[in-house]
Image 1 (cartoon, rainbow, N blue to C red):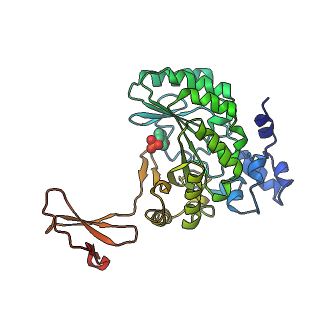
Image 2: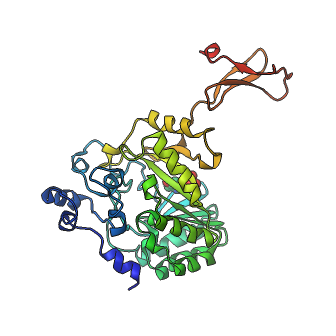
Image 3: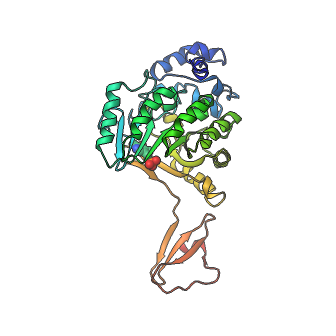
Length: 365
Ligand SMILES: *Cc1c(COP(=O)(O)O)cnc(C)c1O
């Protein structure tokens, strides 16, 4: 057993474990985790400052999870879009490959809440079928390993997944989606990095939701992966009480860049059963995006997306930047980050731009 495995086995998983740290109602916690499992690594538990804070909300079961009856189990229709078990093929040229249903931490807002916590690694039969499907579909040029968290697997098991994928000639890139640098950074070992870097081009998307998760340990984990030549992106979920605030989100995005991680997506929380208490109004995300674009480095600005229920895929939600088109002059009227409106002459029309080129905002309304 490796050190990280021993450390993970000391995570908080029962109501009794949790009651050693916090004043909770063990009967209530037991009821919730019968339905939706709990695992909190000691490292992440130590980031909690007090009950109800943004770290606690992500990790500690809440009775509202089992009171939520309105939401579907599989809002994204991942089961519907699955041609063979463990594979989701929704977009033309890329597939999601769910390689395990275990995680180092069970996030309370998980989009696959219905499925996580089951033992182990995809079985041999399902694995062979998934590899065969990818090999037979030459249009697939990008495989995203997800789960569960692929990095909960040992280096050996992970290599037994990645190596056969790399043999497939039409596969350009391999991606891994993992929360390990955030919840359990000690899993990022030098031997893991040495294994991964044999399989470039390999990309990793990590998952941080709050600036307090950007610790020296998390930074080191990201830097080790980046030093192995792996470009890092981040996917954040917009969560009520955690990061539904422009200042918090701005600090998170800027902090990620300092750890060599490029913010990739901010997701509107999915309508997954058991997670409804985390959802925010769409306007909250738009307000956050308006507070980022223009006010800070473009590198710190991800796309805000809603994964459309029913398998529509990710749809970027943008503050309206085209406010109109002036038929008379052939100019587009564009709104900048401050809300000011500027003319942009369409190609092929006579350019007539006044020196300041600005239109009073009330001219449009
Ligand atoms: C998110 C997702 C992808 C990857 O989408 P990108 O926009 O390319 O990052 C692929 N397949 C499924 C089913 C997804 O949900």
